[in-house]
Structures are given as structure tokens and as C-alpha cells.
Length: 156
Image (cartoon, rainbow, N blue to C red; front, side, top):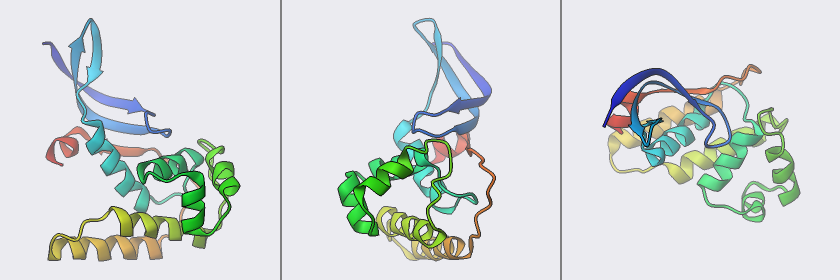
């Protein structure tokens, strides 16, 4: 099987842009495909969305909701808004949702509380670090895609 390393690979498989650097590509049936474990990438993406410096987009909101396996109604009930509000946010696609900052921080806290494993003391320290980043984040208005290096996907 032929292999090559591609300097950058851009995907929007989760509904928002992700750029993976130095990705290994393999040739299958005449086409070059990234050799990526998409489950690992989705776990890394949910963690990155928790602390990314810009506001959440509609596509990112949809990914968060579906990653956590919530219906519109379930997610709305958890964060205290109507299902129609969730749908409205998600329809923004690659635009910012325009939700209020305290709501956005609450959603990020919900990700942290429900997707983080407290397996040891180091994990608790990581939790505290992420928690503080979310609290302190003022969120810039410039959208930037998530970036990962291929080596991070292999190490996870």
C-alpha cells in the first residue's frame, strides 16, 4: 500500500473546519485517503471546542449536541432553552451562534463535566486547568479552524 505525508489536510466531516498537519495518506482504490482514527479526532475536537478562543458556530454546536448524543429537546432542557433555540443556533452553520456569553460558558462547562474522565490526580488537575480557561475566556470574534498535528492523533 502506497503512503505519503501531506503537509495539511482539511476536513469538515464534523460540520466545521479542522486542519490536520503532517497527516499520513494511504492510496486506496486509486485515491489518496487520510489514515485517521475519526473517533480519536472527534474526542480531540470536543476537548478543543471546550477551550477554543473564539465563540461557537452553529456547526460546532451541532457537533457538541450529537457528540453528547442529545436530541434538540434533551439538550435544550439541560441548558434551559427551547429546542427551537438549539435549532436556530445550529442553522448558523459556520457563523457564530449569537448566544449570550454566560450561556456559551455554561455549554462548555457541560462538555467538561460530561466528557472528562477523573481517573487520577493528573486528570483532576487537567479538569481544573480547563475549568479556569473557560471561566477566564473572553472569546475573540475571529473564527479559526481547529488545528491538530497527526502525531497527536497517533499518541491519543
